[in-house]
Length: 333
Image (cartoon, rainbow, N blue to C red):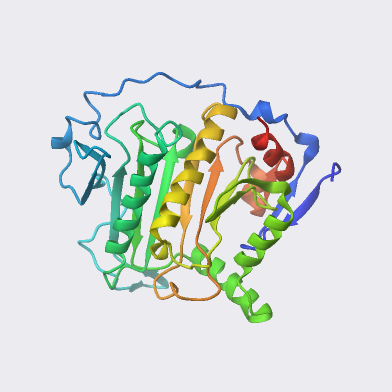
């Protein structure tokens, strides 16, 4: 192990190079360029802060706080959307090239009226309201026939692509399914055809039986550093019950998902000094939602290292930190 090795990611069939000779101590991954900051709870120019509701063009969904005295989460259209519902999904040939209009939806999920909060610092009950918001909006968006794929994601910090500090997530809906998603579905289909079982359920069973990489667990979810983690401290949060579609999540699972997501991000906040990160809810594309081989999960990737020329050229990640070492560090008190 200390000599390093190359591991195959079972889900994507992409290789990851592990180079322990380049390894840093876990503490060395702690972000030092921006320490945990004391932020104000209200920023006069922030369009997502309470009191600035007039800066949003429309409210697509709003859920109240626990006291029902004010809003806790709000969903609004992105003012600078990557995609727009005013277009269509018709394909057009331009010579040898295929194009389509910029159809889709791009929404912002404002996670709190408090500018200074983040999921890591919110009470668990508020994170549960956020998960409820995700679920309701996901269900509504997937009712439209032309909506083929909904991606829920969060960018935290400059290196992760966040342009505003106020706590928020995003939802992008497309009228096509990206090749990256199709590839993942096809790998799961091949595995199911060979073995008659869900690949993700087999991953879950193995990680639970061999818990070296397990970081957290509750009744409904397992959080672990994947065997072929692409970056240091990558985490997958996977439902124990087989379900292809995030829309199938139960009320109890929403609560358990909120609890384990908050726990993991608080762990990052405390042990890695609030690193920049991205998370995404990887869920089934439309018409795959009931398939027995697809299994939704949340993938979290801290932005602690930078890809360089070899990764770009070969498409292979070089991870200086072993998954087992990362899990052990996150599990220490």
